[in-house]
Length: 468
Image (cartoon, rainbow, N blue to C red; front, side, top):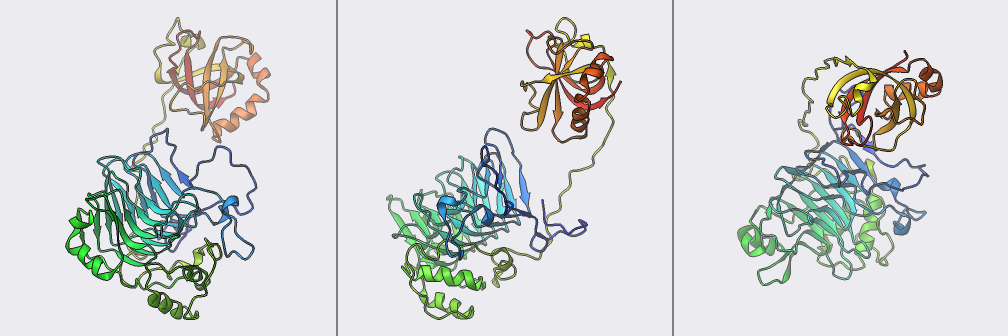
């Protein structure tokens, strides 16, 4: 969680920004990096993840024309800002900004998922995706301000929410505005073209969505679009006919926001090419409020396209006067890790040979031990789930007096960047001296690695190293 002031005495994510973005002078490689600024590894369990109070800004991951009037896709980072794959994921009080791809993409599982009180701005393809939601999942999408969606060549779009065929999406009190279409494709505030009739749509504002407010598949398998006020009123009264579990209170009123003048001029010039299902009088009224000419200039399909929305023009400019969308002044959630009891481990001093397969090597299950060992070469075997390769180094710790060629060693796992890691780097420079003099003192938790063919089938997660 972010959004704290400098001394952590106050928390307001929309006043005190905690920004995650690529350094603007970054020139490194990309090998092995995931798409997202925040991304859970699909192979690991990150159930219950809560992300609260961050700015995820992809502007510095993208490339733009010299005048910044359009994005350059081939030089920009393609992918979502936030990706997750486990159960019960919550994203609250964040600003997600400027991705060349989705804003939020999750393989939704479980019934305690939440996307609440976020600005999701200037996305390509989809701002919020539930297209990979699993059966019996539920996703609460509430009080978000979702603005400015672009068509992504080769992929399509744009959508405020793209609802998948599975899961239950509860979409309440959001603002969906300014979604563009190309060739008559998409441009919807909410798309339900898979015909998910567990969807709930209540008290949302839809405004200036070029393709329409709500697209759905009816019982005959036809894709239809709601884009007129009278259709919105009918949707509120008869949700079942619109492939909805429940609906009510949705409207197409002006949300009372004031976009950045520079951005909106270029955006509405692009819109002027093909107005689609837009109220152009309302569009020009907003241009007038921003001090722009009443009639937008027509632009070609790739001018004024995907330019970055400025972070410093979000608050208070994009806070609605309607009490829908993001609320910036409220009692923000408090978090506590609970009482932390730092009870010192009680280590049992053992002789090195206790780790042998003929002694107790196969019986260790996390026992705190203290022993003497020499420092050997680096290991490449990661047998313990609590010491993954991504976070730990592996080192062979030798029976005192043995050389690097011995088979009498255990695997030691040291957390990268820790104090014990710093000591290891220091001691390893003089390891030949220490090894000749009985080794160094090692403290850690010992585990059987499941390899009975090894003479010493033990791995130790190491917490302390000391000279003899």
